Structures are given as C-alpha cells and as structure tokens.
Image 1 (cartoon, rainbow, N blue to C red):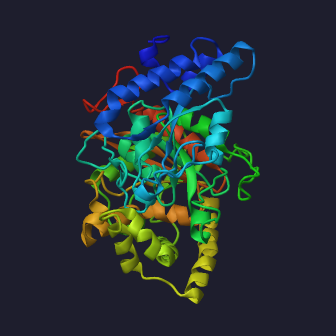
Image 2: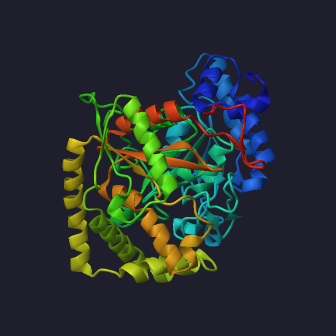
Image 3: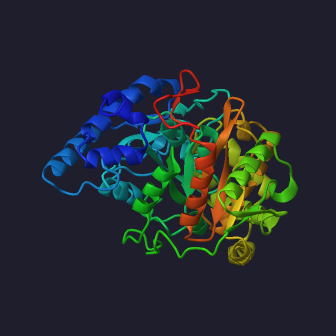
Length: 483
C-alpha cells in the first residue's frame, strides 16, 4: 500500500511521519489521503464538525517546501489530527458545540495545538462533543447533532471527546486531541477501540478559558488535555511532543518525559471491581486479559481489593465540581439547548452544593486523598483496572432518567477517582467482546506517564490493535495493523 495516496490514512502516525521525513511521500499526499477518507466515511459517523481542508493543504505545502530546503520537519511531520470543539484552533470558531458560540473565532491556537503544529502535525478538523462538554457523556451537540459509534450505532462512542475517538478509530486522522476531567479521553478510547492518555495536571500546557478569565479551581486542577491514537507508539509520540513547560500556562512544568527506571519486576495492583459495586462480566474478562498480558511481559501483577478511598473520592469530586457549576448555572443552562441541561441538573440534585466552609474543606481533602494515592503508588507503581465498569451503553442513557444517570456515574468511578487524585492513566484496547471493543486503563504515579505507556504497550503487543475501522461495515480494515 505504501506510496498509494488512498492508503496512507491506514498507517500508524509514526509510519506516516517517518515516510515524510525520509522523502518516501509528501505531507500533501498524507493530507489528501485523509481528506479522501473523511469524505468517504465521515457522513456515516458525524465525528468531524468543521473540515479544515484548505488550511491543511496550505500547511502540507509549506512543510514540503521546508523539507525540500533541508529544514527539520519534526517528529509528527505530515500527521493529520483532529481537535475537540472546546480547544482553540487559530482562525476558526471554537464553538463548544453551542449555537451561542458559532462565531467565536479563536485568535490563536491553544497551547497543545501549537505544540503539535510545531512538531509538523496538521490539524484537519474540529471534532464533535456534548454541548459545552456538560450535556452528558454522549457526543451530541446543539450545533452538530450526534456522533455515532462506528462499531455499533446503537451504542455511544463515549465522551466527551467522542468525536476524536471516532475520527481516529475510522482513520480520518492519525491523532485526536481531546480533554479529560473524569474519563472524557479514556472512555471514547475504550468504546472506539483506540488508545488514549490522561496526563498529570501540569504535564501539558493548556488554555481552557472561554473569555479573559480563567475557570474556577476544580476546572483548573482536574481538566487536562490529552491525545488519542490507534497505537500506543503513536500515543507516546504525541505525549513527548505535548509535554513540557510553556510560558502560556504557569501550571506546565519541565519534567522529563521518561523517569528513572523502576526496580523490577514492576508491581501492578489489579483492581477488577473498584468499590465493590459490581462489574460487567465482559469488563472483568478484559481486565483479566490485560492482567495476563502484563504477567507474560514480566510485571508482578497482584490482585488488590480496591484503590484508596474510592467512595469518599467520588463523593468529594461530585460535590466540589457541582458546587462550581451551580454558581454559573443560571447563565450556563440556557446555552445547553433543548434537554442539554438534564445531565448536569441531575448531578447537582444528587450531590447538592457546598457552602464556603464545606467547599474549602473539599479543596483540602483533595490533597489528603492525593497523599493516600502517593502512598499506594509507592507500593504499587502501576494500577490496572477498568475504564468503565459496563460495556458501551446506549446513546444518552446518562441523561434519560435517574437510573441511567446512576448507572453511568457509577461505571465511571475509577476514571472519576483518578482525575480527582491527579494521577496519569493510559487507556488501551484488550480485544473484542462480541462486536464491541473492550479496554482497560493503566494508572501510574504523577508525571510517570512513561511507565503507563510502557505497560500499555506490553498489553497491546500481546492483545493486538483493533483499528482502523470501516464505519459503513463495522469491520476492521485490512490495511492497518490488527490483532
């Protein structure tokens, strides 16, 4: 297939970039391959909300000219990526999926977009998400409608970074850029059969402002941008590009992307049913497959009862963030469109809101919970567990009624806890359960994304790669790497 324009979309991002750097193909050819793929498969899933074809072609031509002059093209030369509707791409609207912001043109790229561009990657489109990321887990927005799961349109692709998960899974982009505050990268990675990274807060520079003012403390400390990719190697490549200090974000710190080697064999705590609330048999089997893969790779896997203080953490997370949302709710609720306020409204009713003294206690409690996690991760440098304790649910279940809201909230509990604790995690596929992909997450110490990626790569090496996928047929494409 190499050298044929129509097939480059199916290759891993690392392979595409190497081919551009070596002169085997051009960035223009990589872009045209992806634009053709988007035209062919995009209508079936509605993942891309705004196609950036003209600017992508200009960026590719510029990169090819620079390469012809002998200039450095970067580790992601020619790789196409999508950007969630909540992350700014300079010169085009950052709509957040809301009609009110359809003309909110960004003056400049958000820091992670700028980093990917500087490495030679090319933004090819904005991607769908729930309105304002607040309307639920399913990527249905007021402006752009809903995104379908390419494996089964009767199941959600997950969210809130669902558009990126679908675009990457279908070969419309080599990488996706989303964000995660409680599973919003990891869930679509798991439901779409790709890999996703939730980094430590401060690992990547970010800018989540919707105006001149920064968001409140919870959004500052818990929301992180993160990449999605079809292979762990591609995910690592994006991680190394995105990491590092940046004057645009005082939170971003200059921590090396690879830490000191851990004494082996590395201990892995396996938590199959976080909190003991129940887990779907297929999810239990997925964790078991990953556990066996890590043991086969030389890791010291050990079943443990639970992660630290799970119930307390989930309760604190909900009460803290719902209190912050409640402050702005009268202004925010009308922006969510018809029915878009149901998910968050149920969340606020469930948890209640805190007064000032209780809010301050919750802020202090987060540090105390992080101490507990630090102690746990001192004994077990890695934790293996589910991303979502159920198989992919039907679209919009979390907003339908109290029972659906409770099921989805509970199933997200390990993602919720790890976001509140501020630790990194990598979601990686583990195969298929019937016609749907399954996945797990590998959780690590703060700023040790490298150890999570190493373990995820070991799982991938033994259980295989599931995508790219043809959304029109619900089957894997023969052009890409498979299990």
